[in-house]
Amino acid sequence: MSTVPAPASLAPALREPLAGLLLAMADDEFVLGYWDSEWTGIAPMLEEDVAFSSLAQDEIGHAQAFLQLRAELSGEDPDAVAYGREPADFRHARLLDHGRGDWAFSIARRHLYETADALRLEALAGSTHAPLAELVAKVRREERYHLMHVGSWFVRLAEAGGEARRRLEAALARLAPDAATVFTPLPGETALVEAGLMAAGNAHLAGRWQALLEPELARLRLPMPRWEPPADGRHGHEASEDFRWLHGEFTLVARSEAGVTW
Amino acid sequence: MSASSADRGAGGERGAGPLLAPDASGHVYEVFRQEKDGDPMRHAGNLVAPDDALALDYAREFYSRRQESHRLWVVRRDAIRDLDDPDLLRPPLDRSFKKPGGYVMRDKLDAARQRAGTTKPAARIDTPGGAKDPTEDLPEEPVE
Image (cartoon, rainbow over the protein chains, first blue to last red):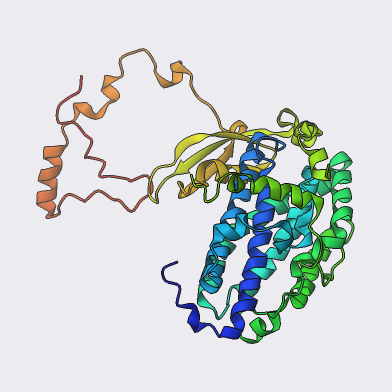
């Protein structure tokens, strides 16, 4: 992080949109990481327990890295941002507002998220903001494995028939309205695209995501989600009861003693 | 409570159907690990997975999530042909005549190299498994 150039190299008008993008990405990873960490100890088998917990840890790590980069712009301490905000101040996509549900639900949600996240990261890989491009290159190397692992579980549950498939279909039906919310347009993103910080805007990415996922869902004869991101898919909506519960959990230690460390 | 709270601790998922039951569709895989490029592959341990794809994922998690491996070999245990028959591996009769200790090679090799004007080849470090000059390990004197 010491090689990050002074944020002054970034046009002032781009700072706030970029900080908003980084916060949205960090919150997505952070909230998903906490949801999926709930499988630690109760995953379907021991090997998957280790794997899924490790994936969840990766996401928390990515959130930390995004918040660290954001701190260069906003000056806000990543820990304070992660553990010091009220539920209404989080900016994660509504897809991540649901509780972890059963195993099929966690896999279905994660597959929708990973495929969307991969396209979002791809759009940032060639960012003109070098620190962002460098970080995204590292994150993508880890997400590649997430995409493989979760994708293989998704197909496995879909092709298993019986209870596994019924649960997967039920999960997709429940997630359908929120599936595309990762691509909710962000304030100021047009300026980010024009300056080359992002290769494409969220509306365009949502279209690419549909082109990627629709054939797979069709081949597996699974229900289609809503492909267009709603305008209020990321902010301006009430935090769900599930998320307020999760927030209580992940802020428990931070609230127990101000500035607590270990 | 929320949906997630209601589902929490739903241990029924642990054994939900034959898909996830190791005894029905799981296989034991043995994992071999190479720590650094050029090192020999060493047995690391084993795991249970329903198929090769997940076995590779789990091997990665068990033996490389802390970046401790350069390469992994993952093989189904039932693909390994086991040989531990003492009659075949360690016959009881005297085998000392099969050991190379009876031949003193070093002086003869040195003389031959001198005649040929060559020097002793250096140990090869570029080959996985680290093939060395085969004469290096030969003892001077008969072992037995």
